[in-house]
Length: 320
Ligand code: MN
Ligand code: MN
Image (tube, rainbow, N blue to C red):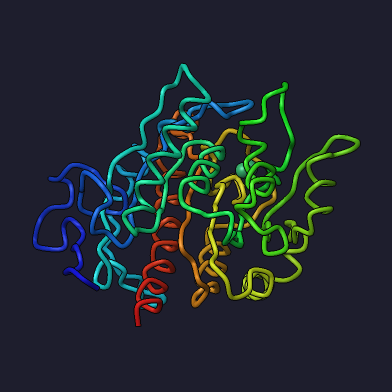
């Protein structure tokens, strides 16, 4: 590493509630320069079809990060000891201008890539993954995707608009940013219409789908193993729509679907991805107005930390 790692806030003998809230207790920086991994918010929910509020997700995830202490007891990962990680704030958005917001979020993420840092975002609705991929992935080197979700998000358009939280992976694959043969969806479930064009299209592209029934047959460790086989050895992005998790653990989200994986399952799957070439990620669809207790945001922040551990270990492995 060219510079000293940045310790998380509160790593000294300081009460954790005496500092401004940041994602995962990272230090605050004004930009991505000199960082290995940039944490940031994408406070945009203009892509939501039904119940909104995810624009407030990054704020509540910061509040509920207060007890994250920087080291992973289960894996021994210590990303803040190995890497320069900071919260660089929120991407600029204009809640009255949809197209402009996608463009300004994309430009914000491009600055992260141009600085040589890897992105780890807190949404926002799931549309936010598209500007992260547009800003940080080159179509000459598409990423594999580990995609946790109850829904495939591969519709072509909803109400005639092509940019919303049901379409990001249709766009990302069309634009060559994601390799569908290295795309695995985990946690699909719920109801569909009589014909489901989004699922049909995803099948045609060769996307691997581990639906909730398959997950409960396989178990968490075998699910991680299957995901590893699909994404293989190239660069991988982890996108975690929290509605992939059961609403018992993630009640505060716009499109909850009963009968999903629990927090413990998610921790085991994510830890089972260690060693993959994970270069970016996001946790999205936390809607604080739908869960003012903060329990959803707490769980989301802890899963974001699991992804940070994977990225930190990979960043070190890449530079060895
Ligand atoms: Mn979903
Ligand atoms: Mn989604």
